[in-house]
Length: 308
Length: 305
Image (cartoon, rainbow over all chains, first blue to last red; front, side, top):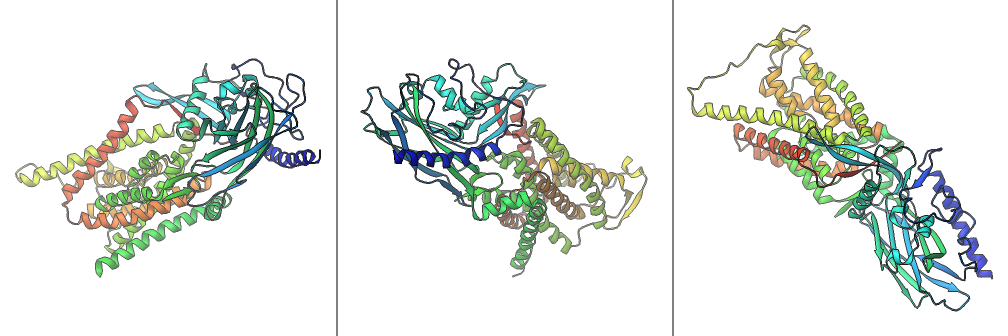
C-alpha cells in the first residue's frame, strides 16, 4: 500500500496550499452566501461537504464519499500535466496543456462503461451582466444581474456527451458543467428571471473562447489510459488555475484528481503590471514621459527631415 | 505579431494597433486635431475595455499634442496667457470628469454616456464646420455674395474680469475661456479625447480668437489637460496600459508626419469639408448604434469592490 499512501500525501500537499490560496482570494464578501445559479436542475444534491466553496475534495480527503452502492472505490485516477505553470510573456498567444493519465484498479474492469471528464478552471471574479432595453428611443443598459463568482476561463473535456455520463446531482455536487461552475449571490435580484442572464454570460464567453465544452475531447484507450489536449486562449488572466480529472461510472463520480496550474505574467508584462498597481503615480508619470518623449522625438525628427 | 497587453489582459495584433495609431495620426496631421475622438471608439471596437480605452487614449493624445505644440511654438502661434486660463479651467473639469466617469462606470452607463457625448458633439461640430466651409467655397466663387462681419460683439464681451490677451489681440473677460476650459476638461476625462474638435470652434466662434493662434493654443492646453487626465486615471483606477499606448504612439507619430505633408498640398476649405464629413460619419455610426436594435442585448462588465 506504499504507493497509495504516497499518492495520498502528494494529493494532500497539492490540495492544502491550493485551498488556502483559493480561500484567501475568495471573491465573496463575508456574510454573502453563494448559491448555484441553476439550483432548479436535477434533484436535491447529496449534502456536499464545504458547500460554500466549490473546491472539492475538501482538504485532507482525496476520495469522494462512499458511492451509493456502499462498496469501497476500486478505481483511482493517476494523472499528470504537461506543464504546471504558464508564463505570459509580451508575445503570449495562447498555450496548450496536455493532461494525461491512467486508471489504477485492484480488481477486474467492471462491466459498465468508464468515462473521464477533465476541467481547467481559472480563478473566479465577480461580474455584472447587463441587458439593454429601449428607453426613450435609445438602447441603454437597463437590467442587471450580479454574478458572485464566474471563472474567467473554464474548459470541460469529456469522453462522451456530458449529459450521458454525468448525473445532475453529481454535477451540482462537483460543479462540473458550465452553469454549475457559475455562482450568483443569493441576495435580491432586480429581475424576476436570472436564467437568461446566466445563459447570455455563458454564450458570450463561449463565443469569446473563454468557456468551452469539448465532448469527445478526452481520448480513453483500453479503459485505462487517457489524454486530453486543452487549448488556453490568448486572453488568459493571471492567477492560480486548477485542473480536475473526474473518473465516472454510471453517471457517478468514482474518483477525483486535482492539480494546480500557475498562470503568471513574466518579464516586462509583470514589471509593468506590478508598477501600475504598486506605484501608480510613478507609472502614470512614466506613461506621460514616454508620450512626451515620443511627441518631442517625432517633432525633432520631422524638422530634420524637412530641413535636410 | 500578437502582443499581450499587461493591463487590458488581452492579446491583440501589434500591427493592427500600430495601423490604428497611424490612421489617427494621419487625421491629426491633416486636420490639426488630436484624433482622440477616433481612437477611443476604435479601441472599443477591437475589444479593449472602455475604462482602459479612455485612459490610454488620453495618454496617446499627450504624445500627438506635444509634437504639435512644439511645432507651433517655433512659429510663435501659441497664446500662452489664453492657454493658461483655459488650462486652469481644464484641470478642474478633468478632475470632475474622472469622478463622473467612475460613478457612471458603477452604474453601468459609461458606454451610453460616452456614445451620447460623441453623437451630440460630433453632430453639432460636424454640421457647423460643413456649413462654414461650404459657405467659404460658395463665397469664393461668387464674390458678390453678402459677407459676414469679421468681428462681432456678443454678450460674451460684456462680462466682467477683463484681461488682455496680446497674442490673440483680444481684451475679454476670463469667464468664457474658463468655462470652455472646464467643459473640455470634463469631455477629455469622460471621452478620452483632447477636446480639440470642440475647443477649436469654441475659440473661433465663442471667444473670437484669430484662427492662426487657435490651433497652437488649443494644443498647448490639451497637452496639459490630457496629461493630467492620464495621471488621474492611472492613479485612481490603474487603467492606463503603457504597452497599448506605446504601440498607438508609434503609429500615430509616423501617421502625423505623413498627414502634415499631405495637408500642405490640399486647400484649407477642402480639408475642412473632409474633416466635417469624417466627423459626421463617426457621429452617424454611433447614432445608428444607439437607435437601432443591437445584435447583442447582453454585455458583461467586471465588478470591482
